[in-house]
Length: 294
Ligand SMILES: N[C@@H](CCC[C@H](N)C(=O)O)C(=O)O
Image 1: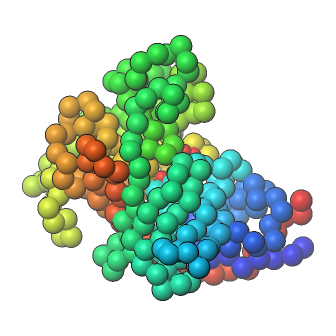
Image 2: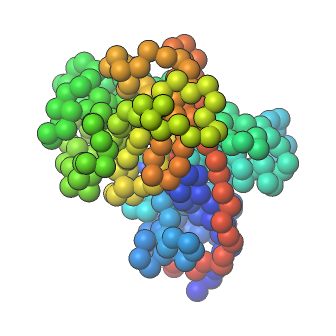
């Protein structure tokens, strides 16, 4: 059995193995299934991972460019991943010294800037358009504050589809049982990530390092492809702010703090410009991992 060198990173505890795209892994889905398993996968502070990032770096471009392919624990490929994009930017910065990186994803190019206080990624324009989410053609209109499998959700595309539900307290929801019927609901032909949000009063929950923030939410997300809850989801954090604006819960263009279990993210969703996601990235370790036979 052959081995490859893989690195492990996380962005607010959404954790990824990282390999160069030319690593000799013929069956990427099998590699992800084996090494992301939370019981038997790669060893570290947490066993397993939320996915494997295969990264193809073009350091001759200005700014440097990286093609990001996220293979998820079930073997599927995600079109976009906000926390994975932050990890990708730091990986490219470590390799080249560049602070600006363009990340090519199936959802489009994403510009990222690496700074000491965190990595900011442009996240595109959130869309409620039924063909973008996507919704089944016979749904017709945007899906806003509708009951899907008993949960009142708003559907938004932030590179991947999210069904966002605003609840009083995200911790009061039995997410492992409530999310799967919504994630697989017929109205979402490609499935959906299920994201819960609850509003936090800033003065009740003031923390350091949150200058200029105008509002705050707590977040929990059940991810398609992981088929479970992750400690953070960047596209989900952007989806919360976009859905909060769409449903009249938020009328600010200022930075919003979104806090999944893994840490704090800062989200900006302007009316006419791309959304941004800012948050930390940590390098964990490097390991030699077995390559499953194709
Ligand atoms: N964790 C990611 C989202 C990854 C994609 C998702 N699981 C899907 O299949 O849609 C993030 O940080 O955005």
